[in-house]
Length: 51
Image 1 (cartoon, rainbow, N blue to C red):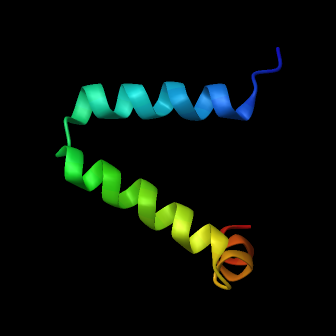
Image 2 (tube, rainbow, N blue to C red):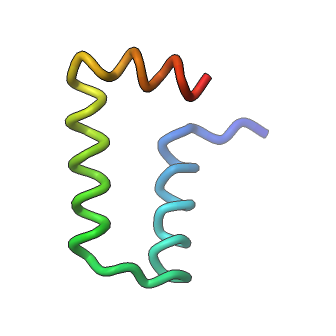
């Protein structure tokens, strides 16, 4: 069974928010920070560290 990555990320995100109930500002900060890092020169570095 092949599940698209975007669907898996949405499901994990929704379950994580419902189960842990973090503040909304923290969720927005993590999403915005991740987006900005991915678009910067740090993106390849972070990708190499994760892999």
